[in-house]
Image 1 (cartoon, helix red, strand yellow):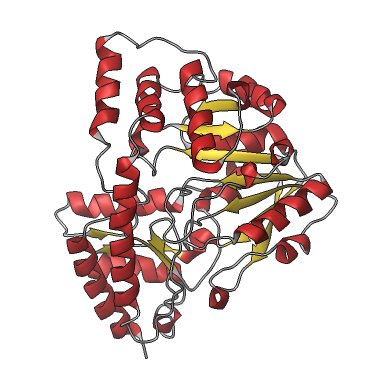
Image 2: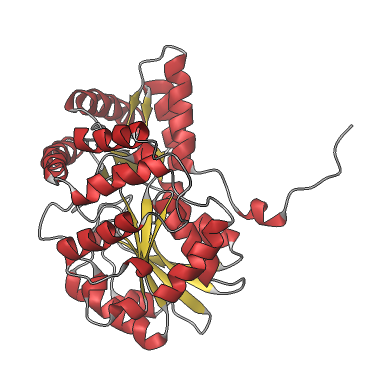
Length: 395
C-alpha cells in the first residue's frame, strides 16, 4: 500500500549534490573492478599532517570526548581569530566566531539565520554547487550574475550592481573560485564591498581556498576597515589542512549574527566533534609548512594540466589563479550525439572511466570541472583518456 504521507515542500526545492553523485558513481565502478581515474573529488589527495593527527589522538587518550559549548571550545575560536589576523590582518574576537561542521555548514547556517523567503541572493556564475540549493531551501531566490570565460570569469562590482534590487539580502563571493579557479582583483573586491555596504546588503565571502593562490598574496575583504559590519566570512579547514573528513569550518561575523547561528546550531548539530576541534586547534595554531608544500605541488599540477588540455584541439580554458580545479570548455565534443556537459560527463565515465563534474552543476552548460588534487600519474592517465574521448566526438 502506497503511503499518503508526503515530504516537506522545502525538500523538493533542492537536489542531491552533483559532486557527491559523481563521487558515488565513480566509487561504484571502482568497487566493481573498473580502473577509474577520478577528477571529480574536491579534496586534497594529501594526508592530514602528522601534528594534526597527533593532536586528535592525544584528545582521545586524555578523554576529551564530551560535549563542548555549541560555538566551539574557546581556545579554538581564539586560535581561528588569531590565524585569520595573521593571514589577513583582521581583528575578530571569539564572540565573533563559531565553529561549524565544515564550510558547507557555515554557509547553510548563515543563509538560514539571515535570509527570509522571498528575498534575493546574488550569486556569480559559475558557482559552487551548494549555493543554489542552500538559497532555495531558505525559500529565497537566486539572482545569477553571468561572467565571461573569455575574460577569465572575471567578476566586477558593475556586474553585481546591475542585479541588485530592493529584495537583495546577500551577495555571495567565492575567490579563488570553485570551479573556475578565478580570482577577484583586490581593488574590485573592495568596490564590491563598498557597494554592498552602501546598499545595506550582506557580503558573504567563502574563503575555502583562500590560502591556495598561485600569484600575489592571500587577501580577505574582511580586512578592510569597517568591513566587519556587513561582511560574513565562511571558512573551512578542509582544503587548507587536508582535513575534509574531519568536518571543521567556521564563521566570522558580527557578534549578533554569530549569536543567531549559535542558536540555530544548538538545535541541529550542537557542537563540532570534540576530537576534531582539538585537531583543528593544532591545525590553525601549529606549523603552517604543510600549506605551503601543498600549494607548491598544486602549482606544478596546475601548470601540467593547463598545458596538456591546451594540446587538445578546440578545447579552451582560462588558467586558474587559485584553488585546485580547472574548468575547460568542451563544447567541441557536443556537436553530435552529446548535447550537454551532463551527457559528456556520463559518457566519459562509462566509456573512458574518467570522472569529472558536469558544468550544469555550476550553472554553465559547456564545461566540466577537473580536480587536479591527485597524483601526476593519475593526471597523465586521465588526461590522455580525455583527449582520446574528445577527439572521438569532435567533428
